[in-house]
Amino acid sequence: MANFPVIKDLVVDMEDFMEKLVKIKPWIIREKETPPEQGEYKQSAQELERYSQFSSCINCMLCYAACPIYGLNEKFLGPAATASPSDTLRIQETKEKTCDSQLSTKWRECGSAHS
Image (cartoon, rainbow, N blue to C red; front, side, top):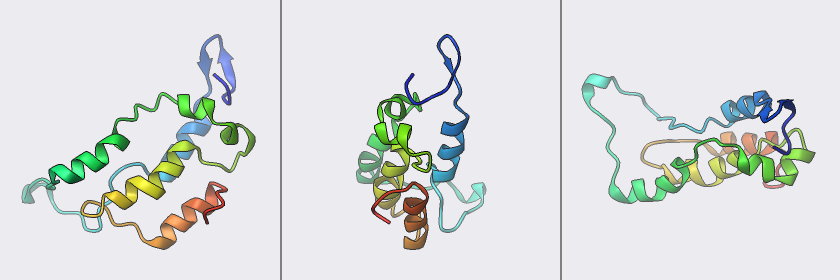
């Protein structure tokens, strides 16, 4: 797979991918956590529809292998980073609150011109 060091045959080193995945925090971060006994977090059908396109990623890394910038710029966090701050975090308004400074920090870290 392009852009990943080969360990042996079809096995590639995923360490860089995993480190960068943790940096972008592709999970729901709530403004205020509530104890489980208070019940689950509700999500409307519209919120689910808007979010589902981003939640279907299985981290197969094909987009990383195909991304020329990921192969050329070691600061670039990858395709997941560009989707996460610009779309996924913004559309989860009722489930997640991420301030502008956090978003701009992520853009700076990934070497994007959008910082």
